[in-house]
Length: 381
Ligand SMILES: [Zn+2]
Image (cartoon, rainbow, N blue to C red; front, top):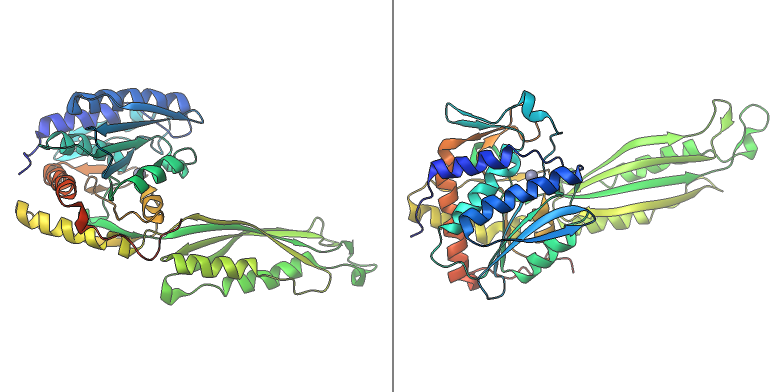
């Protein structure tokens, strides 16, 4: 059985990580943070990471042992907090609560990953990937995340847990569109009949798009930002509106995509153009089911209460790992609350049990990888 980590060391590491601020968009800050993550990880793992800089954004990868990667442990070290947040929200550990910018999302999770893997008897085949742009939607690291996921039997994501410490076994996929309408301008008083009204066309299209939603399937299709026209007395020649789509399944993401691409103008002489498309695939429940069962079994073996699980709307890099067909379990990081909010915090008393469960999961996946079924549905090439 994997030994329990030492709480004092774990907290020391979490604090060191939190005390180096790392807003995603500040490349120098993220690079400095990567230095700290590398130092902390190397201290626990005894191995230095590869430093991977893509488009100026700094990511770290530890490959443990000489064999090909089988288990991907995935996290990020960037946060949503601007430089200077520590001055108003210092890192503190009081009354069993750890606070500080990015502690819950997800620096405590990084410390947990290092301690969980460091405690294993065998760790050959484990890859730990810590990216530096997740909060931006992983613009530079997406391909890296997907490649590492494809090479592994399973992806364990150290994002913060949901309410009550629940694992995240389902995350909605996101598609974003910009629908552009072209009409023809004319004077609204003198000869409006010579115009083609892009605002009217927009109104038709907004309703058609909204009708693609399917609440029973969990699919929301929300027209959001809209613009059209130039002056109050001109038949509008141009209009556009944005669409935010959230789906629970790839099938729904494809259905809505086909529906939006099939839009045709309603008014004679008007034109419709669709830009955008799927942004993140959904993390479907099927991608997590076997790993969740495994976690429940291992928790029982460790004498811990069975982990709970939940579906969430927000996306993470777990969407990408599941999107390439790799079984994925997300929300394995700290228990606490307040991600991206002033009351962000980590519950100290949960840290050791969750780290032990993470270590047990990695060990079990290394020993019994074949119990993870290949995903048949839901995988995108
Ligand atoms: Zn996060």
